[in-house]
Length: 532
Image: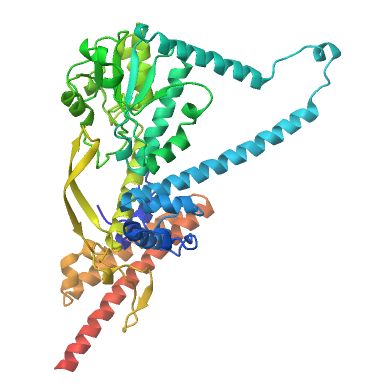
């Protein structure tokens, strides 16, 4: 595919827009003036160590370029955001974290607007409200806060009763040993899914005992911050789940002896036939939305094999999942287990909780939505590539092996490749001695230009002017014929004028390019005469 920041692609995309094609491809990348200006807090650099300082320098270079080619950035970065960004060691994570900050800021702005609109409507309703009769005033109602308090106490009593009679219910244990190995983005997603899972279990008519095992939080500021941010549902006044650093093998030794501990993994070949009481079902606390470099792809089945536990998958033919990520979220797995325990069919239950898009093939999906997400992903990929090529960032590849005994990885080897700092892109425009203007880049991002695409051999041979001129005349005739055809066609004046302007601009641009080629030919001929 052509580079999105090339002149060729920009011209082709404009042509597709003019022809009103539905799938025009990703939007071109254009270098503009900076859309944001991010200034770090005062004395911020003095608080950084060597590793964070390297990430901070790379982040500043990336923001210098990113503000010129990407506008979906937050309006400002708080000190907390700066600290979160410099903890990320690669360009991709920093780029997606900035996108997350932009989406969060936009969501909060929309919520604020909705809240203000709701208040205005409530004020209008109060003004139009009819007076209440004396008989209605004599009635006594409980406040909503009192009702909520009673509901929470009742729910807490149900959960405590489930823990007390855990032999009569299935037991759910979440293996949290991988939380500290997630990236910043992955950890936030994992904690959100845990919060949703706890809430879904709490809201069930008959909740099950829920344990968060292998929860490592000692001397780990990242885990403590995530727990404070997302686990208010656990840290509140009402009991919802039991969180512990102990393993499920220590909590339920009698179930292991009876072989009633089942580790659920999508990579297992043996299906889970039924959900039984007094059996512990373990779900790995891993987010599968994207790959984590420090977590093995089949971590759950590896742990189950090492610990000598049964490893089973949900009773589903995974070949039915034709699109999207075949992995399920934590709350989806819990809901499926609950319904199957209540005598529901496996396939019916899974289709109830798993999104419909995962069962649709590419031909069955909405092509417009699919092309939109595909174009967005391609544009983000090329923007990340531009940042990596134009910033002096250490690209690392690490071979690591996971040890269940220590809950950590042993790094085998690190390979670092540095890009020389003299080639860094500073975004400035410099002037050549012959008067040409160019953007100084570390690498030539414009190799696939228009002329190389249309006639690569012709440009190398400046003596073959007849073909060049003939090609220019043919293009001019084609564009002029389109202009005459549009002039006679009946359509709205504004629309017709817009299309005519684009065609005239295209005609002018093509002739300008060929004039520059002829000028260069004349300069070469003049120099050759002087040399002779």
